[in-house]
Length: 89
Image (cartoon, rainbow, N blue to C red; front, side, top):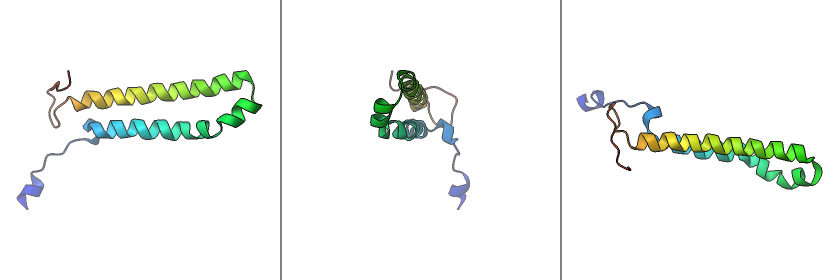
């Protein structure tokens, strides 16, 4: 029972799979409707609207890549400490 009380606690924000999963779910969740409605948008909308929707897609891609970068950064940090361990460099 004493072992349960001595477990270290690490914030989920320092856990690198959280950031990788957040990036994947954010990107596919935000882009799903855009890809589903692609044929309708290309056939019926103006060029300005098409460019705006693809700008939205590009913004989602940038945010996804930032979240991936945060996940890769935390993959090199030892959990529970402020010391950096660069395993992948």
